[in-house]
Length: 130
Image (cartoon, rainbow, N blue to C red; front, side):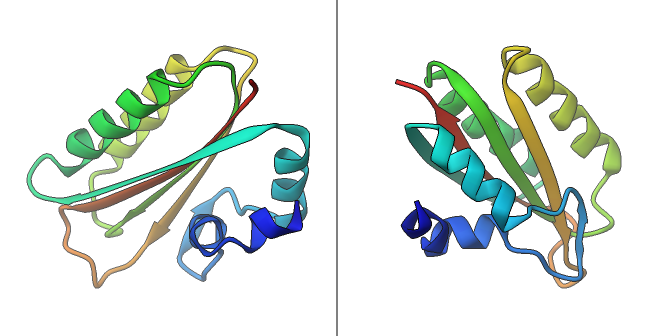
């Protein structure tokens, strides 16, 4: 499974920087998640407009709903620190309600003042059984 953790796209999602908040993904924990599950899908969307969060969430949710037997969702929000917190909290609440109660969800955020206040990037790794 080590090759999955070395995949650059996965590393970009689970990487930790000084601006990351909430959950800090531990590589050891991520390796355990990948070892125990058979398949995964990476979903990434970004937008820089008035309704960025809604635009990205629509794509992420549509993709998640097409996947059966989700066991774990790792999701990261990249945004300006001044992006409305209410939008983030509503998105997290929606994702919590979307998945089965037995599915695990790991959330993370990364903020960067250089990003537009409207910019959002949502990256998700969906781990599921066959």
